[in-house]
Image (cartoon, rainbow, N blue to C red):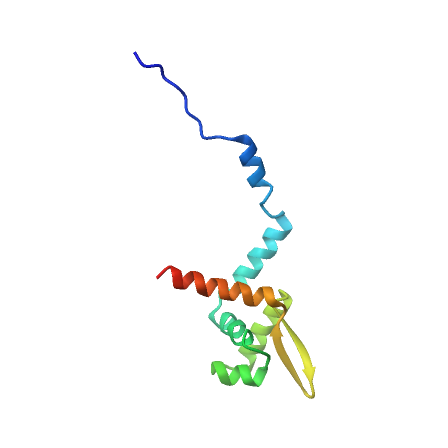
Length: 117
């Protein structure tokens, strides 16, 4: 008669080690805010356009063929989340990605989508 052995896949050290990699509640909340903001085609299009270089609101409006108010609203949300920043150039504000991480994130998303086809 075979002995019944209880098998377990639980390795407490591994679990606690992996758990340490979970962001804090504050960080998770911020990440959720960013991902929620990216659940907008308009905001994503703006980010992809800005990944190619700075643009003013009028240029974004022309590129996307949507209203100035919709562009401004989206930019406000993206600015609040530190995804874009603006710089005054004469009478106009020119918008850019806030840093290279945003562009890298967009590239990674696009690459992932390409791999999932």
